[in-house]
Image (cartoon, rainbow, N blue to C red; front, side, top):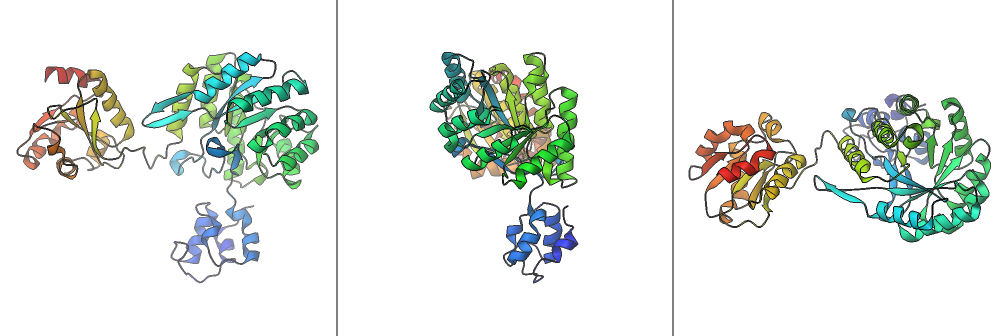
Length: 447
């Protein structure tokens, strides 16, 4: 059970040294009890106190790493039920599943497509995260060959799926250095799978569909045997089952500090759906509630893109919007005669107007003001976008030196700024553009 702030305070040095960043040891203890800081911030803890406070410093959901190198996956380490309470940290990994019964050509084709898939949104590159290989043939040789083929063609993290410990051992001999996720330990094979996880130092998935109590018992058996990196599979496949099980696991881990279920969860939406559309909807539900690894039955770009976008939206810190660097941006190949437009540094706003400007066929200068990541109307309402801000941005980035005219186009949503801006920039002509980015092409054509 988690310790309270007062209980934690008893173990602290009580020097109020402030080196942890808090004014008193009691303030630090209260923050630690709320899972808001790391225990390591206190430089004067004794070893005895560190051991006693381990349960308080452990994140409610353990961070588990799958794979190695730049493409490794980190899931878990979450501390809240709802993103508006603080934020979600580690987005769920999207994994595409293949089977060792697929032909060599099909396997190679899917691996290449998954590895190379990349789309850009609001300045970020969105990608898939890994490959799951299922021992559908129940043949060890087929599985090992398929695993070796996949490993030779990609550096993406892997999930090895076989309930046969001897087959899993053969595959791990080939790819253990890549730290794949072993799927899965069950009541029937738990001892052998634990030994493989310890032998090869790989994370281990634990599968138990009988209920959360039974799952917790099996996880306890695994952790007491020395395996700390665990991924949970409660066997909940359908919409209602998945929502209920994953929410209960999250609540027990975060609200009750129930450590046997304090691990990320793996889901298989394709197994609980009637087709590709239902799989996409169920995967979307599991992005929000509360999967750590989502294994898709198939790779379909039309399904993957909206799922990646949904994941980006949910796992963006609500208190820190994605922002562009303030400055003057070239859209197309603008000249000194090209129009000058103004926008905010909220990424979605920037890319909306930049995309429309580019497709309009009119090269332009796009000046981005620092509005702390707020959109046009929000930043105006909050006092972050005003005439003074626009005028200062023009001077800060020497905009006047880049153009031969003195015309500036402000967003139609803040037309009210026109009069104030004419006072700030008396030598400039202030034009009020359209309210919506999609209309900017027609506006420029008329002008």
